[in-house]
Image (cartoon, rainbow, N blue to C red; front, side, top):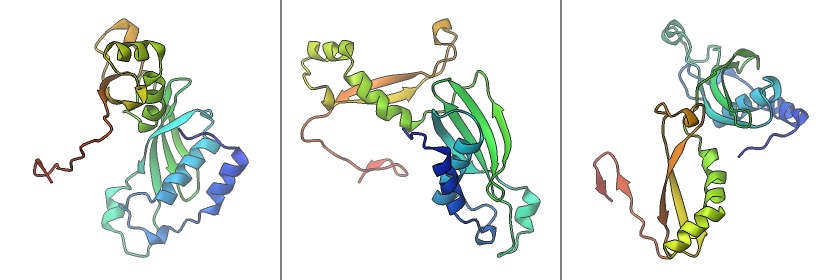
Length: 195
């Protein structure tokens, strides 16, 4: 999970990354530097709190006419679309960010909406579950003494009208035990066979 730094450090980070819009084609995906810059802008300027997880930071595609009329080396406007979760307040926001001006063009709270699965969730979640007393006891009943050998694959699920589940981010955890000597396979997903 990415922890919040001080606003002064984040602003320094934002200002240290140069922006040259002539280096890009209008449909080039955001670079790593641009993604980091967008995250820093959101953290320092959006006022959404410190407990943020970013579900999406992607290019906000320009109008089709700008793409058709593009000439290499011409100045273009780069914008990012962001979906961010304040996980402590359980609030999700959609934002549009100008990379050129570092301005937040839109910031909209999306009540009743849950983000797609965020892998940062899983890192902390798996460790907490595998070491929870009730889980450790269930493992012992199955002859498993080392909870660190248990892997949990989270499968996001939806709310199917169960009142206790309303507004919650839910996943089903498929558990399996890792053995000392694992068998690793590589799958070619395009051809559906083992390599």
